Image 1 (cartoon, rainbow, N blue to C red):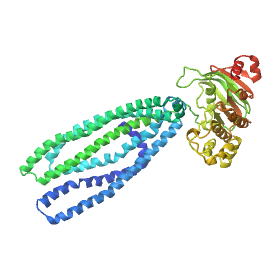
Image 2 (image 1 turned 135 degrees about the vertical axis):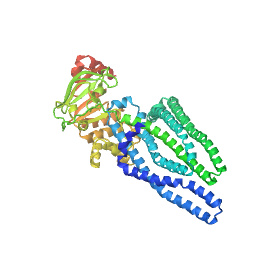
Image 3 (image 1 turned 90 degrees about the horizontal axis):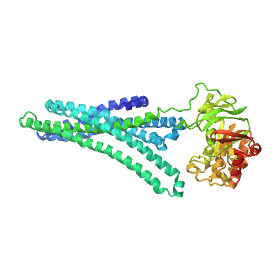
Length: 573
């Protein structure tokens, strides 16, 4: 249960709520004691003595007890619900913000399902655990009051019941340990199940095109079977624990029944006292059963806490300086100095090796090469999606690492082949380029991106929702929304990563015109296969196996009749 200590900082703002809950638990527990002395009084003073006048008051006393119970119970539970809901909210917010701040390598070796599970499902496990805190507060008081009343009635009978406690303690410890193990495993596999769901739904077009329905269904059912197995193991422990509590109770009740009956027969105890004792003992079993449920839920919560606070220990692999240098705009050049790069999860495989080049302010450079040459990896280093393994990337002679990541990325706009759009309106998707943009600025950006014509044809114009990943738009339309974002950003550095490769000739013409306007007065790096795009660049770099093997203008490289020449010949046919 040490894991639960991690929740203490989240509870600090609600100490008064918790304190009020504890105070209200005392009268609430005392009220629950009410039926035991009421049964004793009814048997000994009313039924045995046939006291009819007293019988009239008993129903009113009973109603009065539960009216008071209603008021106290409502306040007790509602205060706790405030704590539960707000703590859940805080934890989810912190997890999501923390994940957003992690470096990109975490998203390559952690499944989407794991991250979703830890952001949404694990906090709900914590909520379930916190929801039983009221029981953990109230039931010991109830047990204490009932135990005290039982001692008052017959201390010898009460001592017999104490033999129940060690076995209960052992049972709680054993079931809690097993449950935590099974629940942790179940949640891990459930995260993989969520990943399968996410992949299947987001890639539904591929699934249907290649008739993969049975394939993804099998993946889903296999993982779902594993989840079910571990849940059933947990269910075995839970369902065995409850009757075990009842069995242990019966083993304690048997000698109490014999001894108590013997006391009544000998006249040493009244029948009312015995019935009241059994009522109190029976009511004591309810807190014990509830505390067993608390034990189960708290172990579920502890397992969720382990996963959540393990995630919160993850650190970004993109360190920032404590006092970063200010950045205004690119004035001289963007420069790669002996840049070597390997992805963090495969440090032995060098993607880039000793890359050196510069792009002067306002100039454009094309990066060409076969698949796997390192083109996309190279441009991903500029906004620090990943960091260089060796060497430096500099803006106006200053290492990128000397700037804050936020300032650096504000200087860069990216238009890529794989355009990501949110399931929101066109206006909001364009606004992602600069969140403080006005509607007029968004309109102007759409005009420059040659997107206004198709936007105005849509039923709701800029307020049209475009579906998950913009699936309601064509490829060319999605690309022009992406270009409008880039126009809105006003960034001096522009990265075009295969921005026209998947478009038809008509869409490409409109997009290319927009890109030409976007590139004006910007320092541009272009990854492309289309020769019409490459030819117009100020310089062309040819990458092979992570190294620059040729560089120059189109005409210069064609005259070499080497790697670029062969590349040109291949893509001309």
